[in-house]
Length: 367
Ligand code: 13P
Ligand code: SF4
Image (cartoon, helix red, strand yellow):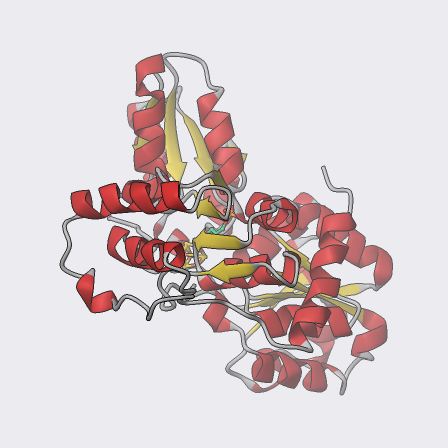
């Protein structure tokens, strides 16, 4: 029988090294019963304990495939929700700190998206004319909205292919919450910039005229990632002055001008793989979250590959950082004692409707 839950207060002042040893011991006790999934932005002290690592898409796939009775998700809230939706009903998903959210995901909510849909109905027939696409960085009820309205989920890996799929269904797309991923993917698909209009969710009719709405092929929600918006085109120009032969790689959540000036644009997994496979002696400017870049630097320096962070400022995802060794040790030791703390459970009907949009995404063949 489960003993009462161990209180978080007992852990908050523990040293990282103590937590490290206790995490290892709890993992040993849990062998086979729990799997730890870790996103690439996790801090090193947490990441090193992950059984499986990846970007959002890879981690979603792992969650749908693993057998363990519990998935401990070292990432942010929307990722743990996806893991719950795609895993089997009897499996449990734990997020070590419930405050680990995503500020970009919070820039769209169901009330605002439903308002947009109603306003668009004064110009078009949304359910016949528009495919809603939600970036995976969004709450489960927005994925459910897409499930109900013939829409789909995308990630930074497959956004272009998903857009292509969406245009086969209907002539227009409402893309939320990240305008930058939507714009870059539309551009890669050949949609002209003047056929992409920004939907300002704080203004009536998105701040657009009826004519602008009719003309737009893609309506871009004006959300963004506060970490990736710190990277500027000048950071690239200045670096290239110093190192003309260096390569530049960034995440598609960066501004359009930053993506345009980069040699490669892709997901966190793509960035990892590309730099790992680079030629010895090569030099890379990387535009994504600091924990990933610091780790990459350490992983490839022995091959003579030089990794530089794109911004002179510290651009860290503060919500990813909330998963610390203390919360992690707390959840694992409780689990080893039979107590499930911080379980993420998406309620019905959102879970079933969101699953439709997620499964659509997983079934689309993208390059
Ligand atoms: P990836 O899917 O590329 O890992 O991106 C997730 C994310 O939140 C980037 O900010
Ligand atoms: Fe969200 Fe940006 Fe953090 Fe990614 S880096 S989880 S988009 S806040």
